[in-house]
Image (tube, rainbow, N blue to C red):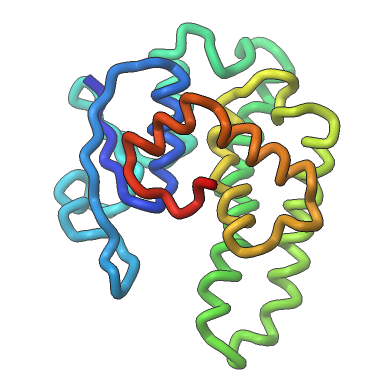
Length: 208
């Protein structure tokens, strides 16, 4: 049985969604953020030394990092679903999206959150942050103007990994200029597996 150590309002929500799309049996262990600091509780450190989420356990193996978990679950349990065949060029694009989400796109959104808390002291950084947010969201919007999902007509693990980018950008009010991203978020959030995952994970601030 796969166990997901799930922190509320976090990246681990997309792991629950993936498991629902794959129709795999799993159990959820929920953790709540500290209401004052918004940090994960210390109990997560008993699962993994970093004390972060998502974390999964499967057959005695403990894995962290969303992209690694998505790759593992699809590769080990997906039976060819939600990813292109590894010998194809589409698979290389798929892997690119898995890394792009956290390697590039998430950084300016996180900086926008933290620098925003600095008030006037953070003002000099905002033009650079905004330009990077626009760069990445513009790229995503252009791709989604060609197909409903990142790799074409069908959902893949790339969409699941990138979903948190669209949701966080929406929560920060960054999406009005990117209608294709808005439509994509609405599209994946309407999927039955996504809605079921929200039920399993509990209240999720980024779900509409």
